[in-house]
Length: 343
Ligand SMILES: [Zn+2]
View 1: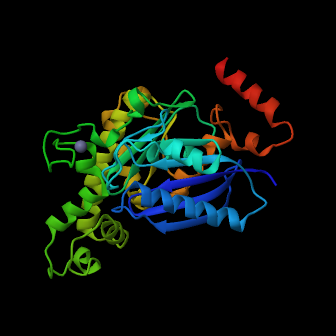
View 2: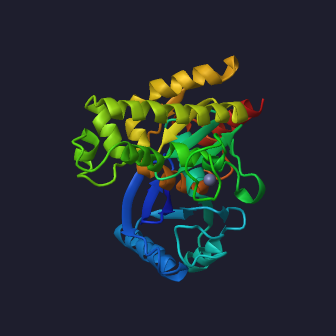
């Protein structure tokens, strides 16, 4: 059997585990609702239990190590989860040390957005590229940057907090306390809030009928826009413009080969793309305007697969998938690829 990694994606609502092959295939998956309010010891107990389940079901698996992703802020080098707002009772938890002692295997840690960026880069929409920006647009906005073949970490691994770049001087206050953050105006939450304000319970609008009279969500806006609803289409246009402004900043800052958009709102990517493209065309300098902006391919597996690659691809850039699948003379090909990328 080929070498596998145990991978975990620790989210505020769901804890996912998987056995992942070197080529990015998920051999087995498990999940449980995260005991997010119960503190770090309880959640680490859940991780250990899920690992036990996976290993018991696949006793023949040759596990090379554990790749883990969790919400930031965290320090990937030191292996410490610093204190995510979505997990109660996590303060400077040395997760790598704890799991390493428990399993006697190498453990790697990355923040969830960076892990998803790695997954999309090595196995998804960005494979074969040298540089990409991954943007996840859902409840909030997060991101990861692959620059010249490496995840860009910055000081203490805190780089690419793109949801909190300021893109306007007005609008609702962001949870971080500032006004005009990308996330505060362009997240799925912001889109749902605009739709809720535009309508009223019982007004007969399609948006309120879809939401059952309650608050309208981004998902309802996309659904109504697909049905041709005029106000939903206007909301989508406004959303695409905000995304286009943020993406233009990312193009100017990082000059990626492509931008990959994931997260819940990527379900409406086909509706948003023309407006995003128009805004980029109006605002980006000419040299940046032809950069592809594409939807993510791995869905909710991106973080798990990226985390696994921290173990299975350690020290290697994002070589094209074909190289990863060639086990026979993969090493020499990879060496050649490294040579080419450095040449
Ligand atoms: Zn903010």
